[in-house]
Image (tube, rainbow, N blue to C red):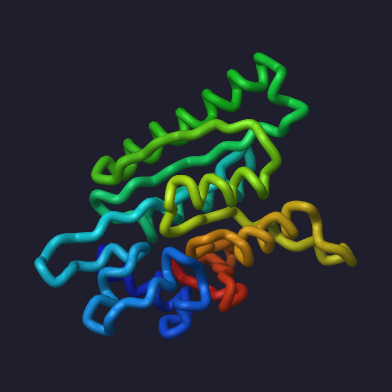
Amino acid sequence: MNADSDFLLRQLSNGKDLCNSSNRWCKKVPERSLHQMEGLNLSSDNGLSLKKRVMVVVDHSTRAKHAMMWALTHVANKGDLLTLLHIIPPHKGQSKHFSASSSHLAHSLGSLCTACKPEVEVEALVIQGQRLPTVLSQVKKLEASVLVLGQKTPTVNCLFWSSCEDFVEQCINNAECLTLAVRKQSSGVGGYLISTRWRKNFWLLA
């Protein structure tokens, strides 16, 4: 599974264009050290496996849960750290009921991930703030290697992007790590559509 995950990340990151991504992917390193770049859980020259932090933005939506499970099964490997980030809007943070519900959601999702893949370390964070600045700051602060977000199915009759679509696109373009937007296809089609800074709606049948 490690090899499959690493190959997928390289494929989605456009391989040779990793240096156009972020500080965590673009540090200039010798050719022989390419496999040791942070964000790829590949074996180093001394046989050790490099650990990465995979961050997933979670909420009550089905698309966020799909993205979380996809990240767990397709990106996170043994020994990696999966960070579930749940953001409370500023105007709702004063509600004790809402805060308790948010905390319960994040930790219940964390327990689900641990049960499904115990070899991956899982942590749940609940932070109050504006979504985009909070995500970008946490990616930088925690030095995330990969950021995964759920992507909403576009509305056919909508002439303008929704706030959700704009948020995802802003994360893809501004986060200091490889950012993947994930959308699960309908049962009749199957698989997932993955979008990155370089590839849009990359169909992954898995």
